[in-house]
Image (cartoon, rainbow, N blue to C red; front, side, top):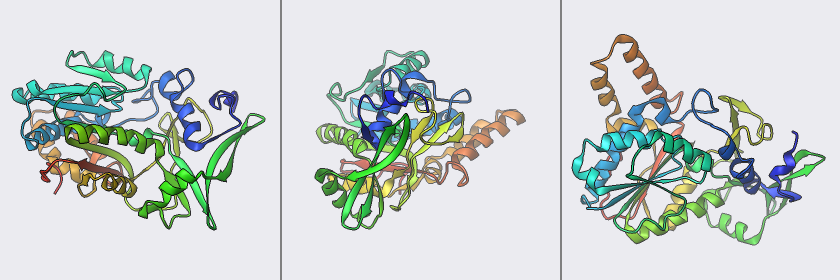
Amino acid sequence: MKNNSKFFKNSKDLPVDKFFYNVMYDKKNGYYNSKYPFGNRGDYITSPNISNLFSEMIAIWIVATWEILGKPDKLNVVELGPGDGSLTKTLLSVFKKFPEFNRSKKIYLFEISNLLRKVQKRKIKSRNVTWINKFEKIKKGPVIFFGNEFFDAIPIKQFKREKNLIMEKYFTLKTNNIIEIFKRANNEDVKKINSYKSLKKLKFIEFPKNGFYELKKIIKKLKELKGCLLLIDYGYVKSNNQNTLQSVIKHKKNYILKNLGNADVTSHVNFDLLQEFFLKNNFKVKKIISQNEFLKNLGIIERANIIARKMKFSEKSNLYIRLQRLLSPKSMGSLFKVILAYNFKNNQYFGFK
């Protein structure tokens, strides 16, 4: 664990979220600003890299949602944390098949990593795409926000209950070794945690304070311009007492405090808590469903069968292996969940019952 002091920034100890924010997003040493994380040569693979069918379904969902919103002359589509740009590249291709929609849409990519912006710009050669790190540039027309594996990458806080106290977990550096300690949580965080029913009976609590801060910016924009937010991520529906912080390097599990700055660190999303957050902010929420249900509702199997007709056997086999990875309960089908929050009158959204 050499040179771990660089992630403490001259601090004696840091809460979990601040420590991992430095590990992941520090401009000089942070994982997302110093390493290419995607695909076989990276550390993990996302749904758009597994199959174009995933991105095609998202494109169809966006067009269908535009119709539900009344086919506005101006529509903003914002991808949150666009990864290597694969999803937006496919979106642009599919959108060309819908000329009226294509004229209406404006695409924004919300990205804070300079390294990933360069990766995305190499892949996406389009004047119709604008990179942003704030939402102020979005001024007219409803907004569709979409994030695939966006929320899990935002560092979380961790707490435990001891009798009547809530204690926050910190990391501290001792002779270049990192150890865990707990300190009494501040009153503001205690008050917030206690305001959520889904966290009330938990002994160990994961709280996405930074994630909620980012979502509040999105909610503010949606209250101003109307629209919706679709998030797809891995996680659980019922709150539990698990420590879900996890690290991956070269597609293999990694001890959370090893290879800092060289390994991906994420946490599972608490969809129960996420739903409660949206409802507290006066947004409607569709019933949380699995990725399997969502993609099947959008017609991914039918689309695969149409494409397969013109394929050789080896290509067809590859197509269905990739599709199985997206849909299988043993792979991403059940682990990944889908949530839709919106503030539009129409309750009928494609893909949700």
